[in-house]
Image 1 (cartoon, rainbow, N blue to C red):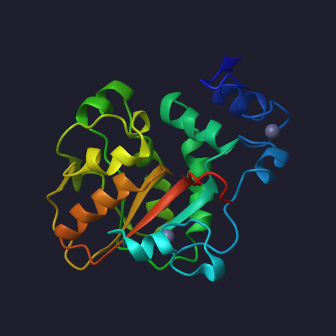
Image 2 (cartoon, helix red, strand yellow):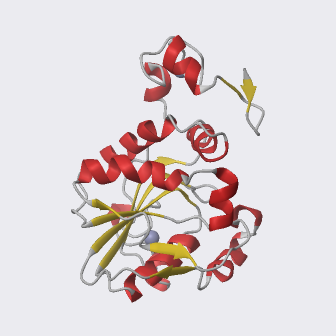
Length: 237
Ligand SMILES: [Zn+2]
Ligand SMILES: [Zn+2]
């Protein structure tokens, strides 16, 4: 048995795959999660701002997006970034648990099933250095099943990080937009294309905003964010 960084116990994916144990609670499971844990995932429900996916009365564009419009056009998130979604996302991102990608990808695919069609699906790129350290890009692993389900082309190399940036998670929220400025370069012509950008977690949206800007400079007509989990501001739902 392993402990993740927050000290919670979880079973490696291979046990869930071959031993019939739920990844979260170790109870009997047919898939990676038992029915109870699957049902208890913190799905984002209720009226949400179409731009940023935070709660908004009547589903109208929220005051924050009206005051400072982000450069992406829409955001769809499947889950709130809270327990136990955080455990799953963390295990995929840092624990090498790649078998979680199809599960989280399927949840996201369900969430975007009613969204307008896109031409291409593009994961948020990692820097070469971080990709070499981690060995995989969790966003790319999520983007694969999504592109297939959406019947869209998978663009793994259309964009890259033009410079390495400190981890956003290590910075205060107020510093994150500045940290990301000019971080992406897109060489692929995307004239008139509708692009879905896939990531595991959206917190301030600074990374996605900067990437949307680079994609629009490359000609993209519309950029939407498809994220597994949305960090909610304190007190929000
Ligand atoms: Zn369970
Ligand atoms: Zn908003």
